[in-house]
Image 1 (cartoon, rainbow, N blue to C red):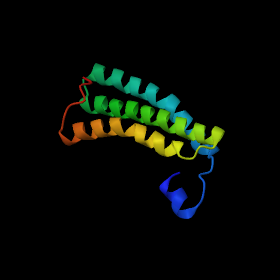
Image 2 (cartoon, rainbow, N blue to C red):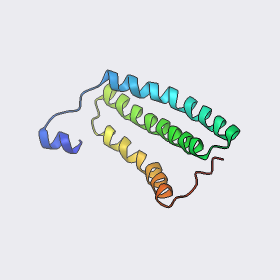
Image 3 (cartoon, rainbow, N blue to C red):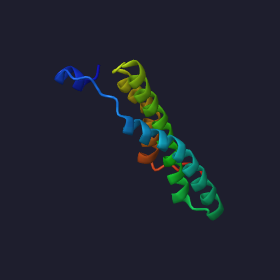
Image 4 (cartoon, helix red, strand yellow):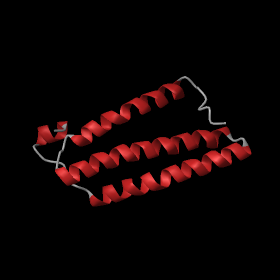
Length: 108
């Protein structure tokens, strides 16, 4: 159970629109990342290359989110959402550290 579920004694509801939007992000973001990466390489644009990495990260997060939402919708396992959020932490920590240290994304 999530903290809010425990505090307010409510169960998370299934959101069909949330699942649809997350599914759309999972489809669109890798394509967008690929297009940005290709354009960044052609134009030698580091900002666009970094933005391509962010789009790829968004696709990863959409995959994790969609898995959590779908499992909760099908099997009504409310704690899966929290577990999915924990799976996102490693990549967020790595990307956050790189950004704080001003490291290049290595995309160009």
